[in-house]
Image 1 (tube, one colour):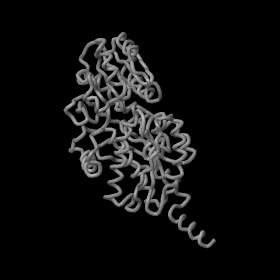
Image 2 (cartoon, one colour):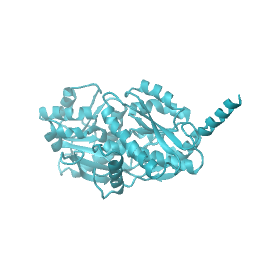
Image 3 (cartoon, helix red, strand yellow):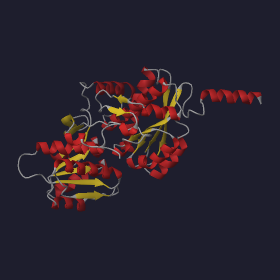
Amino acid sequence: MAAVAVLVAVACGRQASANPGVTDDTIRLGVLTPLEGSQADAARPLSVGNEVFLDYVNEELGGIGGRYRVELVYEDTGSDPETAVAKYNKLKDRVAAFVQIYGTPIVSTLAPRMATDGVIGSPASLDAAWVEDPNLAPVGGPYQVQFANAADYYLSQVPDGPPPRICFIGVSGRYGDAGLAGITFAGTQLGFTLAAVARYENADTSFGAQVGQLRQASCDAVFMTTLPAHTAAIIGEGAQEGFRPRWIAQSPAWSPDYVDSPVLDELRRSLWVVNEGTEWGDRSVPGEADLLDRLARYRPEQEPDYVLTFGYVQAWTMVQVLERAVAAGDLSREGIAAALAEPATLTFDGLTGDYGYGPAAERVPPRASSIFRVNPDKPLGLEKVAIDIETPTARALTFGG
């Protein structure tokens, strides 16, 4: 009995029950992401970005607070909300927080459970709904900000004459809804009404009906809330029908693999992609230079991928929150949540906009976006059109409520 008591005492010393995922020298963070299936290729660079930043923290800073090394614990969601719930339940008592929760449907399913459990996590999604969720640590300007800036910028470039006819196409679900909300809001600010709205299902492989709807509406610009599996196919079907508007896509719509697409010429002619930050490889931006150096050190085999940058920033966000919890001497669930709610501006050295944290209702997400065009000679197949534009339309956006 005495021996058992000693073993129990040692175990309690290593990980206090009040601090799940925390030992004397380690903090474990969960990753809920598709490891197999159709979205795994898109999700994998996010995890590489998480790993590269945390390798830097572990190896060069001695861990969080100079003491706690970070370990990642992965579970495969298969991009399925029901599976994600089971995997979340498996991990929630083994990790201090979740550094990555991939996909808008997964985040929306897990958010109420996280609130009940007092667990925080970073969504790999730019839905504006996360801005005021106290258990989520979002990064980047929301999808609505992307389209607000892009619409304002597009109209500023249109020559004098009849107002352009602006349209929308988006995948069904919350991701598509967020894009539609953004371009609809832009219309209320800029004085246009959408000439057509086309939606499609994630499993669709042909988009003739949707393209026909847009062509019949004589759209001059089509704002796209699409996924990489669909973007080139939609633009290609439009070109086959002689429909060649300005296509303006949100950041998840692009894949560097498109530089080998059979419709590359059409993408070069007609597509803009809205994202944040600068071009890949621009060492004039301190955060980009650091990312490139750390990538060369810890993952030299990794190809350029701007999704990787998002994962890198996710990890950077979580580290800044956990540093505050360590400084306060409280790595309990309540202590980490309090650190997330502490007023502070999280900075990323130009990789993405600064994010004003604090009480959830008072958060201030970035309002700037960057617009890129297709250039296969660039590392990601994208080159800058306009960097870090912040328009009156984006500044007028409000979140929550």
